[in-house]
Length: 395
Image 1 (cartoon, rainbow, N blue to C red):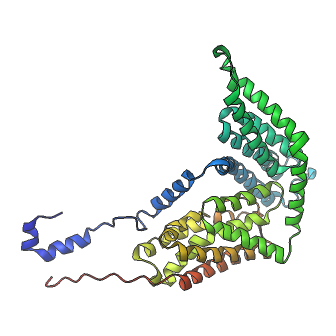
Image 2 (image 1 turned 135 degrees about the vertical axis):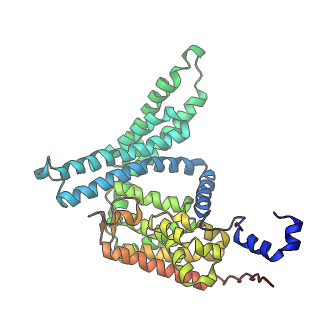
Image 3 (image 1 turned 180 degrees about the vertical axis):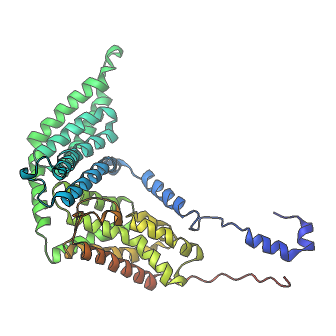
């Protein structure tokens, strides 16, 4: 703001001051508010989750810390004691102990936690015990994360139904959430898991696991293309999270290749955009180019949502370009036989010995995918019109 007197007596100085003190307004991405836009986009995506998808993602979000902690401890144990550190001959050593903590404790809790918090999302606290116990049964009978998902939904909806329909005298109503619902819910889920659901799911999981472990050639390429494209389709939305949950759940079954493909494909959208802002400046506004550095940091950290501010401005051109790069990355990761034993961390977990199988080809897949993404953006995005420059006359 300025007075009329200042504008009349020294207009040129007033214009210079306005330019120097100007602040960007509106929703354009810039280095100042870029992180805030990413957080806002993630919050909006979370708010749109409803129904079964919301419950599944609640379970997955609580399961991930167990996967991360267990997977990293297993990788560290291999680094200390070698690939056979878990054998009885190494009992009592530091490497063997870390393996027990990561594999026998951390990974053992993954499926029960997944099932328990799916049930919690549906039925609140009374659903936790039936869900976790059902998840433990799923682990025991070999139905893995698929059985855990089934147990979580069975527990949640059965407890929710009983909570809505069982009526007790007011004096006994306090027993319902702490005694009656957990007891009946556990009984129902346990019997269903042992006699109805568990065995068919275990057979299905064993078939899927055998197929994934034996994939070669065209089937591996197809799965990598599919998972990669899903990771870039909505960047943190339902499709992205479905691919991530699929890969994370397979870690429990000892299948690590899809996890490698998913993380690599989730890194290339922000990385490709950051590279494109450097190489093809005429395709991006000044604000987008300034945000390129922050986008790159999010990319190497495996935060795919870093690409959202760019995609939101031009979705019909940006999203297909990102999907092309991510699909190529996922396919290359699968073809190279790369495996990842931890579900997150980006480049920061790559130096850990044995966390990644075929590290060199894995990095190559990420680099190629980043370049392909940037190239696709060059061909699909239109040049941005250069804004008119203000010239000060008589300054």
